[in-house]
Image (cartoon, rainbow, N blue to C red; front, top):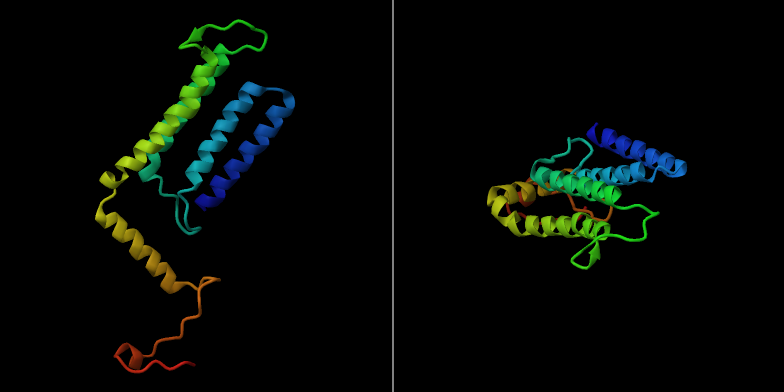
Length: 166
């Protein structure tokens, strides 16, 4: 259910991006593009169609990225004007370019690196063991297309008897 709703939201945002681009509303288009990027990142947490997305480990990262995108796009559109030929400079860089670099590239990259560094501190052994056990359980229950066929184990084999090919 959550996967369908999320993918429908991305579809609606995509149509909105097409409409705003065709109408020449580039500022609105930029914000819709940022929302599409954030929603695609959020959908990466959906692993199976029968579960709701588990955003809990990523809420801080997704929230931070949302703030960076909004500040970056807002800052760019407030300081940039295509008719202006002279810009104010900060650190030798035009202000809109600096805002773009800091909020759209530098801070999100720093957040992702920081998250990867502290992940081992916030992910305990129980979480990792739970993930591995869940993956093994899924592998036992389902047949995957590229996995080799496994013969059914009989009670005799489980007790230490000989394996026979059927």
